[in-house]
Length: 358
Image (cartoon, rainbow, N blue to C red; front, side):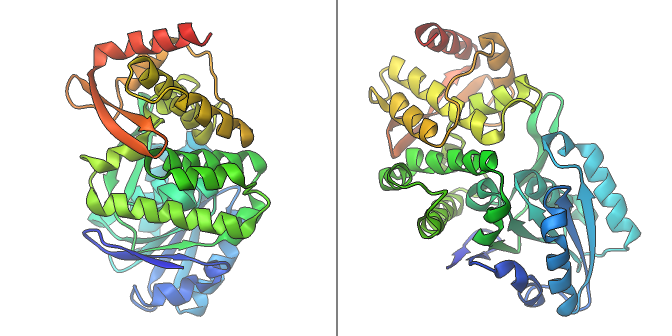
């Protein structure tokens, strides 16, 4: 399957088993022959796929190098980016050279940010190897790193030149991180497509590869349409952050250690839907329907983090504007909307949700 995303810099998204080995051939249509390519990967993915990626590039006439960082969200910081810059400078990379982001969401976010800022911008290719990255973070051009104060607070919009999605790489994904990606897939069903929600509910996607490929394609196509309408996250694209306001707050509360991103987002979706139901803005029973599907994929739906801690972290949410916080709510499964509230109203909402579901 091939999709083209029509952003300010259009690019192709190729979804095909085995397309990792087509990296060199595809790069040859986009970049100067004989140029340098920096493969950025982590300590989990690098040993599995970096050599294949480098060999494919070398066969196409490129000069590849590999930068590997310790796996985990704790590496997603400016100090790691500084090391990436140094490695690229040592290789004397120029604006006609490029980066390959080989890995999950952390890798893609960091490699994309390095590409956006090194020499004021060079090209990069996304090769997402986690389910979460394949269906969500590799498409759309959001890049960035974390600060101690919150997640993704430093970043840039920088579209890749190409996205290669090889479902075969999911074979090496640990079960917890497969479930992690399913939380984002469920999010797409919640905000845009009841049929997608039901596809996920009615199939065990960990055991049905053809249905899994269909789900990946539907999620990517949903993301494509939203990004084409709102590339820079000022309106419609905010809907993609359903569950993320409280999800990011949970990640921050636990110092990015206890919960994966998808686990935190899943809990955030349930909590915000309960709040929507309490405000008579969301159809009753929606939160429990989402919670049931999350449990089906062995994802958590509850957490006892203090309301004050969540409200403080959520106040740094990037969707905020001045003293207003833009909550993403559902009318029902498949229909979402932006609901602005004063930031000071978030704490009472969280406290009420915790009291009613203790």
